[in-house]
Length: 151
Image (cartoon, rainbow, N blue to C red):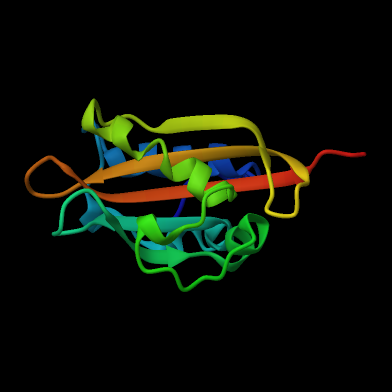
């Protein structure tokens, strides 16, 4: 499902939110079955996706985009959310996953974090829930971009 807007949104949060709203099709939350990464190929390198593990509260990565991994100081091959080192942009984003237990609305976040090298960075991020057959969050798609704070 390609975005129908004649002008492609460049800001990551707005682009992903628009796609999520389009997939909702009048429902309160879109289904995981409707999500197609090729629909957001232009920003997919700055995104990740997770699905709920069968073993408790851990989440399993389906995708970590190379641009997001680089900005987070990580590799793209982490298997679960608990393996992400603290202090990274991605770790900071994942701390918000528990909010989906309270509702099915996107989580938009911005702020600052310190990289593993001690550099201050500003970021903008979004987490989007997708439900399965039980109306429980089955898939989370997130995206973030950051930039170093000038010295």
